[in-house]
Length: 137
Image (cartoon, rainbow, N blue to C red; front, side, top):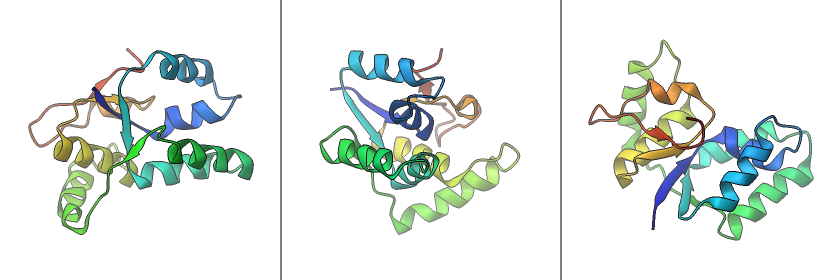
């Protein structure tokens, strides 16, 4: 089964009907065959951006709880790599959520991402590869 990372943007779009990517996020999810993975910082960012409604924030958490996506834990030993990535891409800049997605990709050999963030065309993993964005071509 295919494993793909998902960033905050498409998660926000999925739960915010006024988001310009909402229909695309719904369509993607209906057609996707595989497992979506993310990290807690990404969920935190999405939940914050959905702060206009506690009901919507809860809907996101309930969807995750039902298996809508799986969480990859970021451990203390990942901090060195997170700092390294943040330093390397400080001119972009890379935020914590994005750095955790690169670490998650590296540690789980995931090569694709669902994102609206063009920065992922700049970020490279430890093998100098970027994540292939399958949401926006």
